[in-house]
Image (tube, rainbow over all chains, first blue to last red; front, side, top):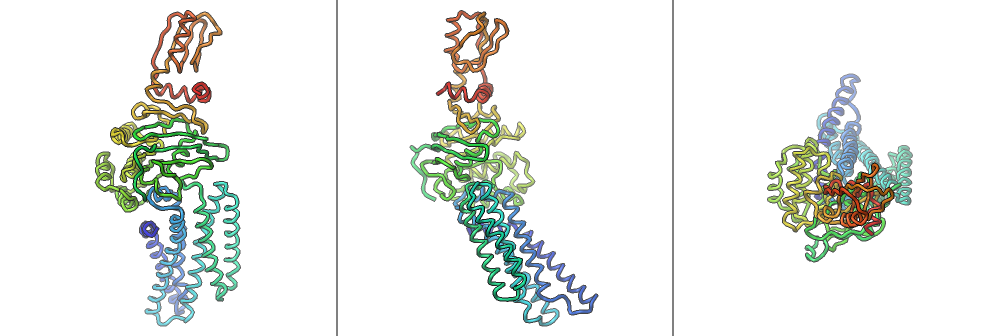
Length: 212
Length: 303
């Protein structure tokens, strides 16, 4: 499984690097503009670091789309991988991509701090909260995909379970905006990530068709 | 993955295989493929050929029945059978933006038993452009890549889903050449789905005709060629009943029939006193068209 995950990360590396490049450009531009136009210190540190995380999330969606379009399961199932391992790759890939985005975001914030002086104490925790939230969004893709696959394969109970978790997760993510700063908000979002991953993986293992 | 199974086992065995889709049901299919046999699975689009192969490759779970490959049960959650299976389909899951060579290198790491030497020799033999990204390859070269990928780990069973469909005549001939060489050693069992009937003559030892999800006939290629004939004759009798006839055209006293049992038909014509009897051989393509047109009737007649 780890070998397949590594291959996917290498395959999508150009997209990720491109996305992070664009994110760095946008963050830098915003910071410079805020200083020049408003004469302010620049945009808040967490905002500058958020764009790389968004880039990681967008690449996670792109990766999901490409893997599906390229029928990757067909290739991997020629070898010794079983559905449980394929499901592992499916749910871990968004974590890796958003995680790498978060890492880049942290490094970017650090670079800004080196150039402009110390950041507010809340910068990194705020960035962490956004990282968890974007991670939850990134896991919605595989969940929706597997709920749809279950419906197409006439696995009614699996489809209903998948869509129920999907709708519940989206509703919670919307509602959690109001408690974003609290520990309950972050904990709830982390639980949403885990629930989405588990349900996606279970639905994938129950597939009766791995051709698409 | 486990060691290979004993040679005596059937290369593939389908037992009561059923797969249902909205508006279509495949099976129940019972089919055995012996080692060293090339079996063409012939049928029109939508007959269930691809679904059959997908079930045999472990990419689909049948609703009923099952498949074995060299004695190992085929299921997506199991891996014992995969060492013995090479699959060429329309989509093979390659990393589209990687070169053909890089995809093969990845497969070398993925598949136990992969031989870089075998893959390189085959790629050279069919002039596969290894340095070109897959999404820039022509359809013919993508088929060649799929073929190298399917053969690289030395499988004993090849599942080929319309490998020559949409190829130009030159590439088609190249692909058929490779398949011919692969099957020539008599060690590989091949299940080859096609609706390009001219491929049959070259490769297949046996033919299985699939229509509307049902196996209507399985027969040897030579047996088929020997028993089917186009027969023309003159006979005044309008309501003539002839054994083995699947198609009968008549203009006044001139009759033209297609018989799946030429011997029985000719015998009956002699009894009836038919005149100007002329018998012509039919190509396997022509016979296949007749079988697929008359599918259910032939199946009933063949028992």
